[in-house]
Length: 84
Image 1 (cartoon, rainbow, N blue to C red):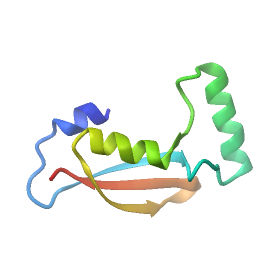
Image 2: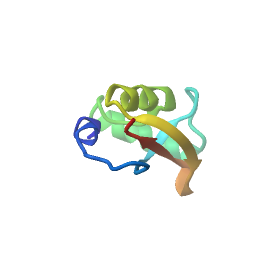
Image 3: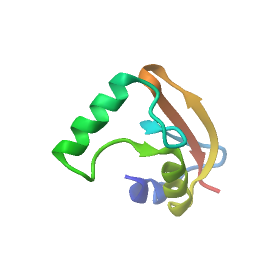
Image 4: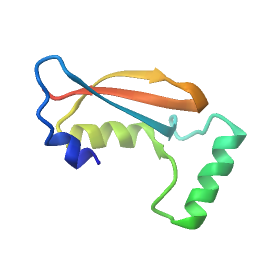
């Protein structure tokens, strides 16, 4: 998904937003997140929640500059990024 995002032609001052459930500094924030992450990983080890540091690195690798991190419902985070 981020590979595709890196090829999007964003105009000046246009942001690209992703909302993901994530680990925050290696920790999940609720029992529901822990359970759901375990279920995802049991189905496929490549699935499951990722850490905020990983998402930030993927954004950078896709040549997207992180601008903001906004808490969202259901313990998700919105990653606001911009193509420089």
